[in-house]
Image (cartoon, rainbow over all chains, first blue to last red; front, top):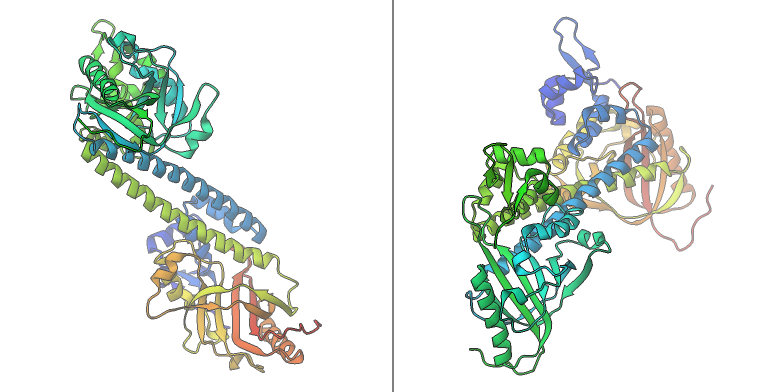
Length: 286
Length: 286
């Protein structure tokens, strides 16, 4: 069989590789013309060389550096199979990384969506909540007045050890009772809702993986200020008492930034909720 | 509540962000100290600023450029939700892209594995094959002597329109009969095994999506040369006749490069197979 020769332009069209790339592949000895016309310096390629571009293009597509492609060309079939197994593993790692990010974004979005659909601030309401998985750590007696952004540092560190995409809301837990003063409140736990499966596997003995269970909750949300804090907490506990709900959990408090602008004064929304026993009959709302 | 101030070193430890990054964030107005000591030029940050780093770190992690992060800081809650939806969509596109590559690598590997586990060359054997999905195009009467690498250009173009990761093996189909001369063979179709779902959606009217069906096949594989080609083809057709198999398909021919080294002479393996009727009783092997 007499073999066809193609010009660089023909190869470019046949293989869908730019002339510029073909010239470069020649220069770096990746894909060289079979023949160069000594008079014109035109490059000519044999038809049977064409399949070499399959490997080059495939590996380039998955991000293999040209230098590594040149090494891959010299592999025998078994070695090439091992090479592809390695590539496949790397692709899978990238996929898992992105799946985790996707899951985290979805969960952060869910939390934000919930905030946006919130009933009016400063009003108690009753709602059926889904289970929320949380990671918590002991608050070691911290109080609202001593609770800082920095108090969450250890918890955030844990989460960041697996996930670079973090929560927009963090929380704290304290006993349900009627408080007369802010100083009477003592936090038992600080927590963060779980965003991804990776976070679950990272939990160390300093932390505890648990849930805010599915059930009926009495809730209130408000714009944070020290005065608002006590007033709204009292509104919540009074509502529970007035309506003879039976509280069966601690109070879960969520702290949510309203914006992230460094140009504006920081503003936070607080949401508090306490789980109550199901009664079969819903008490009337205020 | 009197607010804590932190030095840059303290913020670095609390938020797990390098001092170098914090200095840079200051310089580009992304995260600025609340106070700079006029005597020492030391930077101090308020505790309530700390949560700003949550957004910065999260978006940096998913690859958002710093300039875009600065814009995201000024978004209100609804806009931030829309922004995250966009990020989520981009992450999903990357995942789909990688899933397709993964599927392609897996299928190429499967084909290579099959070749490596092949019985000895030049010997006919009987095997139960799984269904193979293929994309085929009319060969317009091409013959073994006029079949070039370039003949597959159109088929490869179609595949590359969706997948950058391409096959290592391509094929051709011709009628099953006893051939006395190479010149008597006329190809009906050229084909490529389907590597990914994307390829299926790309099929245009010039091409046909079909299968090499699951079933019993009589096969032979050999090192390509024009002489080997006719001799092995005859061996295959003779075997089918001698053993009274009833051929129920065309001959499927696969062309597989043995290596991709530009330093060595090109070498190809050819595999031919024809499907035969199931008989309930397996004829004895030679």
